[in-house]
Every structure is written in structure tokens, then in C-alpha cells.
Image 1 (cartoon, rainbow, N blue to C red):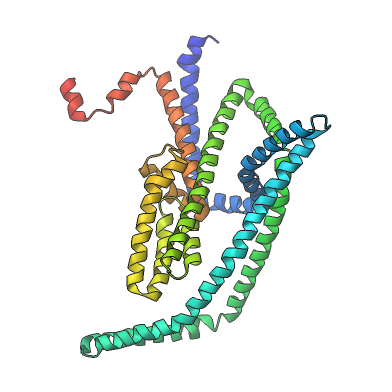
Image 2 (cartoon, rainbow, N blue to C red):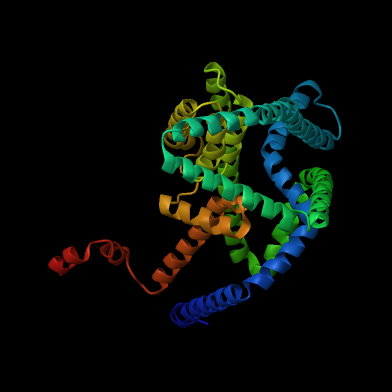
Length: 407
């Protein structure tokens, strides 16, 4: 078939067929979303150890490569005649990376978790006193105001009645269900620990044979799509890898710095629950856009238990900290990694967060950035096939009134 014939008939027909197939698939997904999500959830549940291992390997790959380069340079310098260097280099890089990863996790657990437990214990100790203090304040406020006093009494009576009804009608009859639910949660924790341990083993295997796996994937793409399209797919996968690696690693570093800064300032000002609040602020900061709000609300409630004025000062501090993160630290670390506008960032977090929860909020931005990039390239390719020039595309940006005057 001649080139002109392909460009005139075959390529436009292929684009239309692709669009039609995409529309049918989207229609099918929307109307069968529950069944599809249930099937996918079951598959994901079975493959969780391998998913954990893949995530661990993806996060540890940069450090593993860095250590391998350093080990190779040391061996080339001090043991140039050593045979079978590659297994030693690969094993050393994996061992050091895994050891560093486990040390970081252990340090976090050993330093932060006891502080969090202590903070929660102190909260439970001062909670009755704070409730009594609030009750006394309300009584003093309502002492000379009969309407307010009757309102407080009615609200208190309603709360007590609803609490008794809930305990009698919901909790006590379903106590076996509650116990079974607690047992289920304990079992889920055991399963999660088992999946993480297996995931660490899978991570070691993936890091040790990553070149072989990459070679097999290249052969698979070459055999299915041919040389031209396999090359394009590999280029897109490199873009995906750069986008995810840059965003996730940058966001982790950014959130760690924000948590440390929060701890330093709170310790300097002698505010309570410094470790607990800093952990909440740092962890929730991983979630783009909504993360600061998720972390500020429970932290502000903790500060409110001390005093309303301290809560106000804390909210001002969090606002300054998040402005520093959003305008200075975040752009410095992340740069324009995704290339998305603020509207599409908000859309991607809301959409993928609704589908996959917290995990969707974290990976939603780079995932949507990849989809956005693919759609953009498809549109550019379709415009090129139709012979629409760049000048014509730029003319569409002008306002309608201006275009009418010029025409």
C-alpha cells in the first residue's frame, strides 16, 4: 500500500476505530464498574505481596544503583583483579539499600511510636479534666441566661438519651458482631504483616534480576507490537518512570522536611504533642492539595484541648508552614514534575481518591499526568493527520470577539 493511501485512508480509519473502541470501553466500565472493581479488588488482594515488593523495589532502586556504582569504583580501585565482581556488586548494593531502609523504618518506630503512645496517654489523662472545665465554663456562662441554660440542658439530655439508646439498641445486641469485627481487624493486621514480609523477599528478587526482567519485557513488546511501536511504548514508559519517580520521591523528601520543621518549631515554642502533631503533619503532607487540611484539623483539635489561644497560634503556624511548602520548598524539590495545572491536580486527586482512597490521592496526580500526556499526543497526532496547522490551532486561543474583528 502506498504511503499516500495509508495517510489518506488507513490512518484516519484507525484513529476513528480507536476512538470508537475507547468510547465502548468507557461505556462498559461505567455501567459495569461495580463488577469490574470487585474482580480487580480480588486479584489485587491475591497479588498484594508482589505489589508491595514492586513498590519497595521501585523506591529502593535509585539508592541500590547509587551504592552499586560506589562499590564498583571501590573494587576497581583496590581489587582490580578480583573475579566475579558483578554478583558481589549487586549483592552489596541490595544488602546496603535494604539495611538502610529497615534501619529507617526501625528508627521511626523506635523514636516516634513511643512518643505517640505517650501523647495519646496524656490526652486520655487530661480529657476528663478538660471536659469538666468546659462544663463549668458553660454553667457559668448560662447562670444568668435562662434561655441558654435550658438549651444546654435540652442538648445534654438529648445526647445522653441518644447515647443510652445507641448502647442498648446497637452495641449490646451486636456485641458478638463487634467482637468478630475486632478479631477480623486483628487478623487483617496479621495478613498485612505477612504480605509485607513476603513483599520484602519479592523486593530482593526484583532488585537482583531487574535487568533480566527488563530484557524480557522488551522482548515481549517487540514480539507483540514490532520494532517501531515497541520503541514508542518504551519511550512512554520512560516518561512514566521519570514522572512517578520524580513526584513520589520528591514528595516523600518534601513531607519529611515539613515534619522535621514542624517538630523543631513546636519544640522551640514548648508546645505539647510535638512528636504526634509533627508526624500527622508530615504524613498527611504526602497527599497533594488536601493533605495540609487533613493534618491540620486533628492537630488543631489536640491544641484546643490545651487552650483556644494555642490552637489559634498553631493554625497560624500551619498556614505559614504550608505557604512555605507550597511556594518555596515544594517547587524547589518537585519542580514542575507533572506539568499539570492546579485545576487538573484538584480533579485528579478528587477522582482517583474517590476510586482508590488515600492511595488514589497519592498516586492520582502522576497517574493523571501520564494520561494527560498520552491524550495530548493522540490529539496532536490526529490534528496532524487532518492537516490542521499550528497557526490554525493558535487562532482558537483568541477570544471570539477578537477573532470576529480580525476576520
